[in-house]
Amino acid sequence: MRAGVWLNRRAFLRGAGTAALAGAATSGASLWTPGRAAASPRQDGSGVFDFDTPYDRIGTDCSKWDTIIERHGAENIQVAMGVADMDFRCAPAITEALAERVRHENWGYLKMPEDFFPAIVDWNRKRHGLEINPDLMALSDGVHPALIAALKAFARPGSKVLLTTSTYSGFYMDLRESHTLAEESPLIIENGVHRLDFDDLESRISQETDALILCNPQNPTGNCWSPEDLMRLGQLCLERRVVVLADEIHCDFVTKGNKYTPFATLPDQAVVDNSVTFQSGSKTFSLAAMKVAWFHSTNPEYFAKVQAQHMAQTNTLGVVAHHAALRGGGEWLDQLLAYLDGNHDFVEQYLRERIPAIQYTKAQGTYLAWLNVSQIGEAIGAAEKAATASETEEDEVTPEDIVVRWLVENAGVYTNPGSNYGPGGEGWVRMNLGTSRRLIQLALDNIAEAVADL
Image 1 (cartoon, rainbow, N blue to C red):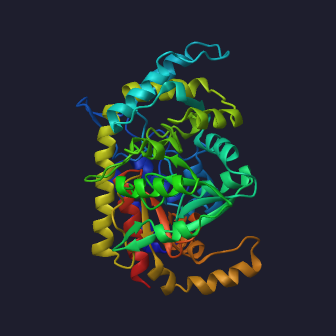
Image 2 (cartoon, helix red, strand yellow; image 1 turned 60 degrees about the vertical axis):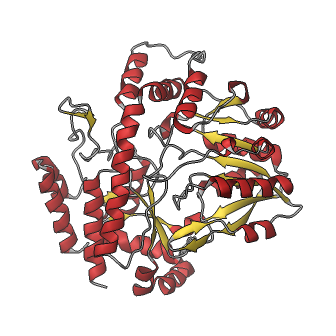
Image 3 (cartoon, rainbow, N blue to C red; image 1 turned 90 degrees about the vertical axis):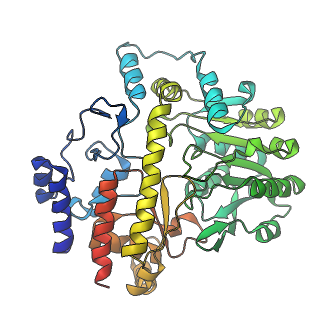
């Protein structure tokens, strides 16, 4: 790593005001010393949550940080901005509820708390104007198991499932598990904003097409699909007998001036009845390890079909954590949303003013930034290097992989290659903004210095 980038790191650590942090930087072992984050999730008892103090996750078997450090070396990773979970302390209500439950030292079978389903229903009603029939809602140990069950229920083995790409890479795993095939419809880009290509979508529907996976809000592009787009998409699927499977796990993250429209709130009941929706608090409250999600439908027949393919596995601590979050995490989330919105604004302005080689249009939803790095790819000869690397490495190497490696080696920043997200990801990377703005600035400062030498 270049000396200038290393000095940037040390300057950041000095700014954090902790001598132990600077020592950690000098050794290259960790960006922080464990336990050096703010002692309280609130600042000075004011009722304002502290999202700005970097919180150490290194050395906790954290996929977002430890896996990347193991892969690239601690000396090369200053800011890990890949896996889509957040670096903040969780809502205090969650920690308090878990601590109370752990004090009861028995872990027998769980009887579902009577208030758990009502908590989910209330959250969706108050936050999103979505009415869920609790009789047509079921728990799962994650969106993936529920989505795989739905694919098995509606999509014949070997049939095609529509994806609007670039889209969440995990959907490809779900298709493999359900023995179905991807039918990819690339999004259109207009003035930096991604749009559905309805003509292309319709042309890709055949007798072999059984389902469409809708990502709303969209990962990685950040789109919050409009009611008009959702209606047009839903009517097309209804007419062509394609079941809509709506993954709305990012539903609670919407940036200022935008709106998330639940598919199940559309005004055409027939369109809504042709769908199943999947949700969880795992993104909203960063509870991915707790393995709790739910799915619901307005169609009893559809619900029963998914249930027939699905076996729920409840997780006691996961239920406790989600219940506490839904009942006591609202204030924490409201403040977090404002902070994340500021992160998006900060990145958009910083790139426009200081790194014009990277283009970013502020996301409508999620805490993810979808960055156009095609100019960097061209400057470093990413296509040629990818072709050469593919000849010797076990897996195919894409130009986006090369850009990601270059950012690690020259800026100490890890992002996700756009090629992971299907057609349309060429020339893009995904950056996770669910972290301290100070770390985001460190990452961008490093990238700006590295790009200046191109």
